[in-house]
Image 1: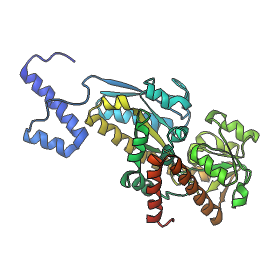
Image 2 (image 1 turned 120 degrees about the vertical axis):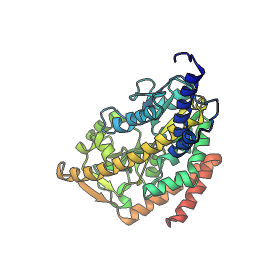
Image 3 (image 1 turned 180 degrees about the vertical axis):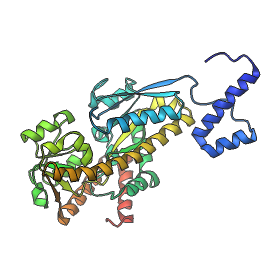
Length: 365
C-alpha cells in the first residue's frame, strides 16, 4: 500500500475501507446508514490490512462436475466478497497431504483449511458423524437446516472440532446418500452379506443391517465394483456417484436415499481463524452457507436427471426398498447414534439428545 500523504487522503481511504467492511459484516442497510449520516466507525479494523492467502485441499477428484462450481466456486465467492484481500488457493486430493491426513495437516498449519468429508475423522471426532448425516433422519433440506442451525447441533459440533485445533465453519450439501449396487436391495434380508463401500457411522449402520462394509478410496471404487470386490457403494448422491462413473459398473440405484441430505464440510485452522476480524469471519461463514444451499439445489436437479439417464442410457433399474427395510435402516441408525453418544457424552451425547428431540418434533419417533 502506498504511504498516505495528506490527512484528507487518509480520511478518504479509511472511509472506503470502513464502509466496505461494514457492508460485509452488517449488511448493505447498515453500510448505507453509516455513509449517509457520516457517523464515525471504529478506528481499528480487526481483519489484517494486507492480503491473506490460504491453502485449501479437498477429497473431490478434479474431473467431477462439482469440483469447479462448488469447491473453486467457494474460493471465488470469498475472494470477491473480500475484494481480493482473502484468497483461497484450491488443491486437489493428496496434492499437499494425503486425504486421511487433512485434519492433522490443517491443525499443523500445512494447510489452512479444507472442503472435505466428515466421516474421515469420526474415530477422532465422533461428533463429525452428525455433520455427515444420519440415515433415516432428515427428510429435507429444511429439516437438516433447523437441526443443525436452529436446534444448536452445529454449535456443539464446532466445540468438538475446536478441541482438535480447527474451526468448523459448516456443512456443504452433497445431496442425498444414494446407493449404487449390483445386488437388488428391497427387503431387510437382502442386506445380509451385502459387500458395500462405506465409512464412518454409515458403515456401522450397514453392519447392523447384516451387510459387510468395506473401506475403499475413491480412486479404487470403480475397479472394486467392476471386479466384484464390493457389491455396492455410496459416494454422495446419484449425480456425485455419476461423477465417479459408478453408473458404468452397476445395475441398480437403490431408493429412497439412505439420507435425504449428506454433507461435506469446510473447516479451517483455529489459529488462522482467530487471526481474522469479525468482518472476514462473517464473510466466510456466509459464503459457506450460500455455497451449501446452492450445492443442494445443484445436486437435487442432477440427481433426478441422472436417475432418468441411468434407466434410458444404461438400462439400469431404480429399486425401491420396502417400508420394512426403511424402518429397520432408521432404527439401526439411531442405535448407532446412541452408541456413539455413550462413547462421547460431552459432544455426541448432547447432539444425540438434540436428534432425539428432532425425531419427536418431526413425528419420526
